[in-house]
Length: 374
Image: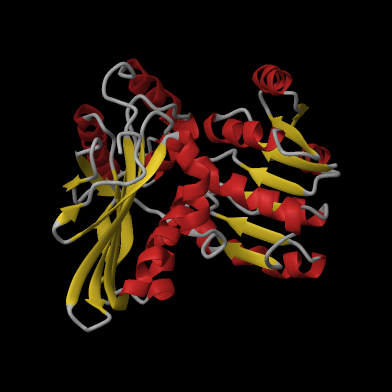
């Protein structure tokens, strides 16, 4: 029997991971977190173990991890965090995965590489939508190109999808900040939650407003895929919430305000509008460059959700955890989550959950062959 411990395993994404792994044979799921009442009740409901854990308390963290084959860290946000959880897991002889979307955190996971190699363990950061799924989408399209000039990525969840304070807090950390972006082969500074665009996602998501976000792709994709321009934007389904964050960006820019400590307030405001909008969301990439004959081309690939938005960001951790438990770690050392999962593996996991894929080119999106309506 192998034990998988999930920090924050009663949250929106952590809970999905625990429920999925609980169904695996010979897998004991342990949920750890600071909220004993919520955590213990959730653990009891799914037949898992619960242990109270404070991430800032080394002894508490060690007790939560001890005896685990794998630790999955889902207790974000990770912006501004250090690697004490990863280090403690490795010291306990435990493989480590996290769901970070923090640019500096994911790209800096090599900090624990030597410790992971000394212990013969694997540590992977960004085992979620960014950059695990986005890199798999680009890698799926890359063989059609002789040269990649530009990678555009955009994310827009449905308003009626569950969300947590850590997800909201992550956006608030870079509101109004100057983001380093790779454009035309050089680094330039762009405003966080600025450069608003309206992008056309596949139906039924449609046209959504999206803005600059500070994510690992901006740091990792230029060297990984050789692109001269890499951009990532995200937006909410309801225009009101997008405009609210745009307004809040200005005092952050002008006066240095930081709204991240008020993430619970922003979350509660967004939940007041929960009945509006839909459950449909999309994660899409637009890759532009030269095809194998040297002619200019564009290829698009998107993941579209019907009713189960959290299925997408939680899927990489579930898939990679199953791999580690069944066959051991695919590598030893510490890495951002790129190349560990294939597009086919992600699609096979998501399709039964009402999630489908759509391809396209410079002429637009094609009709999906694997959607519920097809």
